Amino acid sequence: PHDPCSASGMDWDIVYSTSTDGTTWAAQVHVNSRAATDSGGDYNPAIAHGGGTFVAVWHSGDPFAASGTDQDIVYSTSTDGTTWAAQVHVNSRAATDTGHDQIPAITHGGGTFVAVWQSNDPFSASGLDWDIVSSTSTDGTTWAAPVHVNSRAATASRADYNAGTAPGRAPVLVVAPS
Image (tube, rainbow, N blue to C red; front, side, top):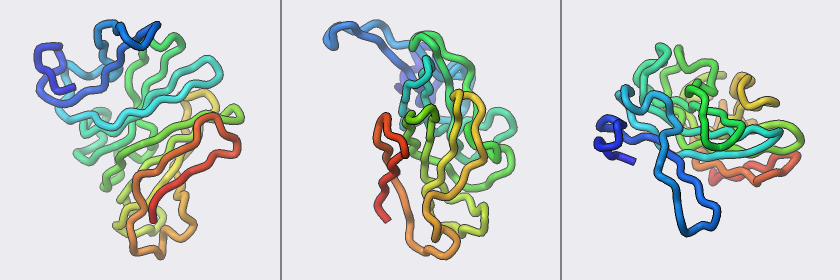
């Protein structure tokens, strides 16, 4: 949350809390390792679990790792759900892309994590409208280059946005208004 009293600066950050009964909750802890020093907001977290690993994804406006000022999809992993690795970009093009990547969803099925999000980055001659893209990982830390979910991304002129995934499905089901 946007709470400068919790050492998270003046922007929005990703936090988690745990509960054993759903009514009593532990104190919030940051998932994004750069919360105290980042300069861009972090939004729309999603989480999946598979193969003994939790993977949290969100979109970030923080220009770390030379990613520029556009928003990018980042992830962090945990084996216990309480200790999180430093955040890293899902999109291998984060340092060179110019469009925004936003509102991720993630699922795990068939031994693979699948992250999907909306992007207006014009890679693969897709134009500047919003398209749904995806990336896969078998371990939650090494991600394939993003690909368009819509096979008509290069010729479509209407926006595709707000993708969702079905949890624990293989093959993965992605739904989005188009």
